[in-house]
Image: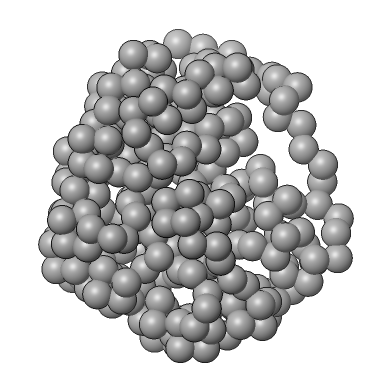
Length: 292
């Protein structure tokens, strides 16, 4: 089947990053030899977020062991673990004066613990140098390993985020090495182990799902007491990735947000350019009432 190239609607237009803060952060990250999902995943909000000196640090290298059909991060055989990476992240957070930091990673199926110890070390190092900084983690599924989840929760992140990404019917097509029920189980386990740590998840739309399927997936997330939700438009990184089936309008995103609030989510960020870490500090405040 021939895929038709889809022109982006007008609401996707964003200004090219030119601010002083953007280039300062870019240089700091480069000098510290740190990766960000902002760059690796070609996030459309990079200019806005970096101008505010907020970034999502991507640990455990920049090569993923999985090859999801929507993701622009490199896939292949990862390099050796860098045990000094948590300290470099913590120092950069301190130098930037961040009050809220988000830490994610590539999938590391090559490691027995999936990299959970490095996650835990990163949280601890940030808190050691900057005790007032909130730390949100966006974690992989660790192949369902309970001990890996416990390792991260033992460091008490401010928010535990794990993205469900899409609806059950097309889940295996876009996340062939993932498991929908396993992702729900991770969020459920987190809530049972540490009830006071807010849980969060995210979805992409435009992959071929229906509105009813979106609503059912949101209901599944609420059934495991997920507190926070992000919903954004899928944008195809390259021709090798899953095609865009349709674009959702800003009005439709507002309807999705309304559905989520009615279901009981404490905060729903929904919009064409919304991504997992978009305005993450605001979501934390909505979940806890604590201002960073």
